[in-house]
Image 1 (cartoon, one colour):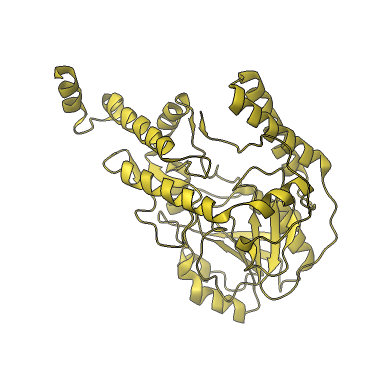
Image 2 (cartoon, rainbow, N blue to C red):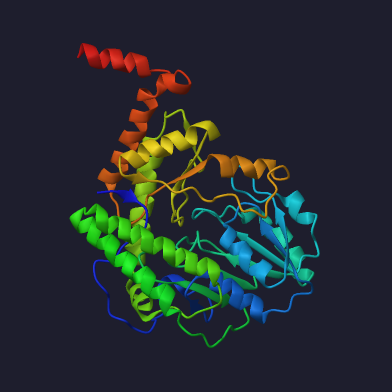
Length: 377
């Protein structure tokens, strides 16, 4: 079975109204939207910041930037270093931002150095938003200075739609309609992906990929706020969060141990504290090597996304440190669909790449000796 890529559904679950799951209890009165992009748009429709300017992290998905631009905001960016930590010097250069957005990456509190900055922004009446998409299932104390939370649910499991907006103090409420074109396209794609997993029929896979792509195009063209659909609310209400966290932590730990000594990659995180639920196992690879290594993994049915393509709004000459992430990062799947054998398969393929491609770019210590020993035995 392939590892990674989109989630899937085997059948259409019962449509139900949302029952607040425990993993969202810390967010007050959340409004469930079809997408996180829609949640951002909904938020921007309601707030009145002191100025229409937004300070956003330079390491970001372009879909987060678009609603701000569409709503007439001037977008500025602050650097993020190789450890995925915000550049405080960059942030302090824009003390009068109307809106400040921050996030922790891949399930880790990489934004934990922002306490003093957030306090200063709060005192200056800047609207502070935390995007909790990557840290949704991680347990650690959020900043008391946050005004709002946004997040994407559909990044964590197979649902047709799912994002949310919540206020730290103020209640958020807004009447929303569904977007059936987007939801139905995503639902059809999820079901076809499930059919492909069961049958290995490549024609069905091709159709599913086309439908996923068309759904993304719909979202990019229309990021107005829409309501989450009934199928998705039923799924998110029944998610076994404890099992999800357990599997992801176990898989992450196996990968963390297994890639030790593979010299062409560097794990972004070398440890995992209690309470962390990883989204992926991110690694850094030389820019010249990443495409080749990713292709080799793909050939073996292991699909590793790149988070993210460089947004058109960013000048790479200004954010030199952040470009080290865009150019080098690769996200290895470790989610709840998989177990120990799947993680060992990933490690095995990575180690095969390490040795078989030793002479393609540079000599890797130990590979030639291992080959000799294998031949002798």
